[in-house]
Structures are given as C-alpha cells and as structure tokens.
Length: 282
Image (cartoon, rainbow, N blue to C red):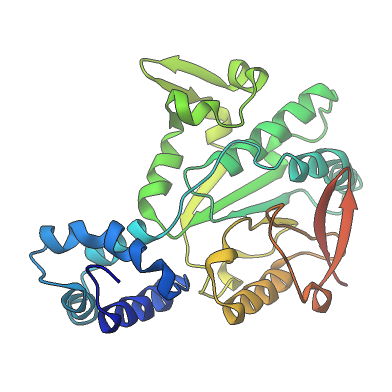
C-alpha cells in the first residue's frame, strides 16, 4: 500500500465512507496517499492513523472539509451525455409547460445532485431559457422553473456560484451558440450571464442526509455520483429520490454509463431518442 499501512487505510476508509458515502476498495489506497499526504505535512500529523484520530477527536470542521474535498471527484462538463438534455427539451418541458398553463401549478422544480462546479445546473438553466425564447413562449417564464444544485464540497460550490470559467472548462461540452449567448469574456475568464446564475440556488448537502427538507421535485439529475457508493447506500439514495419526486411525471436522470439494477421497485425505465430516463412509479 505504499506509504499507508492496512490499518491506516481501514481507519481512513471507514471515516470517508461514514462522512461522505464513498466506498474505497483496497486498490484505491493510492487516492488517500495522493490526495491527503499534503495535509499530514500541513497539520504536522505523522501518519494516516494520526489523521484519523485528529479528525475523530478534534472535530475540526475545516480539516474535515479539506479531507472530503480532496477525496471527492469533481469531474464535470457542459451538457454531459447530451441525451438527458434532449429528453428534458423534447419530452418533459412541453409536458410541464402545459401543466403550468392548465393552472395545476406555477413552478417546476429541478434538482442537480452532486453539481460540482455548476456546469450541469447552468446547462439546465440555459436550455430552459433558450427553449422558451425559441418557441416564443411568453405565458410561462424561466421564473416558473426552480433549480436547486447541491454538492458536499463547499469549495466547488463557491466556484459554481461565481459562474466564472477558464478556457479549458468552457471548451468541455459548450457549443458556440450557448457561449456567445450566455457568456462574456472578462480577462482570462468567461463569465456566465447573471440572469442564468440567478436561476440556480446552490446549497451544500450530503446525500446521506434526509431529503425531506429539500421538498419535492419534478426532475432529479443524480449522475455519476452514486457510482462511488456502497450498494446499500445506493439503494437507500434511490429510495429517497423516488420519495422526493412528484407523481405522476417525476423523472430521474443517471449517467449514460451507469448501471441501475433494481430500479423496478420505484421506477419505470423509459427510452427517448437514444437516451434512458427513469419515471417514478405512481
């Protein structure tokens, strides 16, 4: 295991799974040594067992956040996988808009769970804005759509809230139409339009917690998040997601490469234009 003993790894693994749900196999020991070794030096802690007991006994919230921040994976890009956004635009938005017009409700709630630096929820907000404008829809506005974006990492949420991205981040999945319409160049950064930024509420949230305080949603994007969790935690999160979705047309989107077994307890698997989504059972 390199610079970490089996005992030290087991201690840190248990702490990480307890705090943020990520389940690390022994082959992932390098993640701890690669990502946390700097904290040992910074905090003058001799080894990973010492780090574990410092975390458990001193309960320093800043150190805890540093550990979680270092271990979590924040890979993201604009309009990732494409197919969920096609389904949102071609299937769900027309349905929800008609419901608003019919007077059954005045808002549609969308949750981006594990939002990282904001590309996913901002992609959703831009798509809704463009769709309404392109279709000439004036009786339903972007204000009828409420977008909540959550992540366990406070650091990535600060980046997301700022809405500023470098050339590399902008190039990953964002086409020129969206860039020219919703971003302005300021020095080395591309800055997202304030109207789009204001459409998204960012909140720190641990998916192991109770969802009740978040309210009900029509669409939940939970993509490439639970792949790091234990099977038991995955099942529990999908159960809570099903409970948090409005019926009859609450929808869950997963990553295109994710395997979702046992979905039949709570969801019906749906297909559209090359993509898969999961409609909550009534």
